[in-house]
Amino acid sequence: MKQNRRFAVDLAVTAISFLALLSTAAAQTSPELERVLAQLDKASASFKSAEADFQWDQYQKVVNETDVQKGKVYFQRHDHSSTLMAADITEPDQKILLFTPDGKIRLYQPRIEQVTEYEAGKNREEVESFLVLGFGSRGHDLLTRFNVKYLGQETLEGVSTAKLELVPKAPKVRSMFERIILWLDTTRDVSLKQQAIEPSGDYRIASYSNIKLNQKLPDDVFKLRTTSKTKVVKPQ
View 1 (cartoon, rainbow, N blue to C red):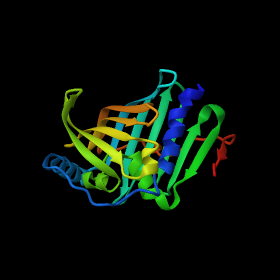
View 2: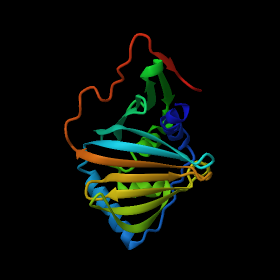
View 3: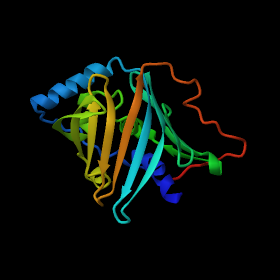
View 4: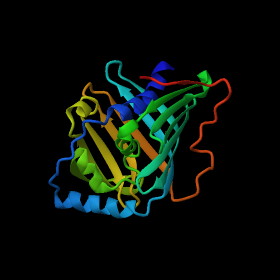
């Protein structure tokens, strides 16, 4: 169970760690990549919300094991500059991961009645862009933080996707993830699959299905349903 909690906790911590050293240097793009980024830019303009089922697989090379978590994820455009994100993890045990426009990432574990709260602070926009990667983001915004390479088209679940390789520009980010592979449905500006590869050989795969766009989301999806016994922990 300790390993099963690792992915959600790591996701929140990584989003905080991902950030302050990101480069904004200009990048050269191929015609094929430029076409994909332009498609994402266009689709992003009409993105309002998304709801999807997910499966997160965390592979650990040293023990040759994969921890699997499943649930439902929600994204909602809050305004022109921010997006809310909530992940309701239902298997193997329940956890809620929530990112809100106040720049806080909260991980709620109902079983132990605890909320772990991380403060994004001045890096809120960068944290947000990491958590919502592949859902409603502008294509050209990727170039500010990654060296982006077009790997061609690939069909997933009957959908033609653009496959991109993202290599973080900042050395400290690359120490966490050597590269990230995205399989993007460019007409909807959503990611069907993501693979984040670590220097150790560990990797994380996120797969999304039953994606619903621009529909009304449940009223309470971005609220934590805590109890009077819930304690809040704020790591420094």
